[in-house]
Length: 329
Image (cartoon, rainbow, N blue to C red):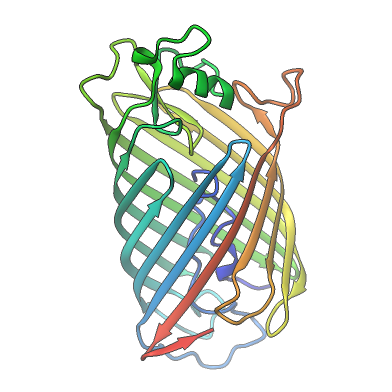
């Protein structure tokens, strides 16, 4: 049995779609897998710099996003035990950007044992007007399909743009993500639970009837007075190609359920996830593909009688470790 925290899983859980769900997903430790087969004495390595860059494109809903993280990390208790071979504590910063927003904040991570990782990120977000800006909603059950959102923003099909058009806005929030992970032979099991508590600062022209707001790139309707988003993602996957000095391929199933405390917005998606790392060289990204039909959703559920396109995310991730001035694979 192996306990591990591989870099390859940094985008398995994307919290806002492919811009960072789940993630969210956990950065993963900076070292390779640990194994019961390698029980040699383990010394503490020197501190290191962990860097990660992620570029994502999503379809149905369409979006693009950049997620950059940098952390200074130090090892925690290390021993030959499989539970204490890649433990660490890290502190740094995270920056995200898309055509609709930018956000930035500090990021604190800790992995006291191989099977558990906790990340906390307070952040500030600026969202500007546009079809992917903050859309006022009077009822959280109103449609959020792409063409309907466009009509709301442009004031077409009977919508009053002064009441339904997108606005700019500011968000103050704190996000916490806890991940459990386990590998038994070629089988990989992960589960990430994320809590994202948000407070909004909205413009003076926000309509009186807009008790809720819609964030397009996260595809969620939230209470304008503040809301908490809960997100849980589970993965069961198999390692098809082992990696090392050769390509690595992992295929499996992902289930994602998110809900909000105040607006009661709920979404359940489940489907395929695949990860491919062509080469261990740092210049080569890890590619992630998610294809997730909707099973609970106001507009897109496959059990509502009308089958709609699934959520699809294509992600490229680069991760680097720099220690004592040297780039380590």
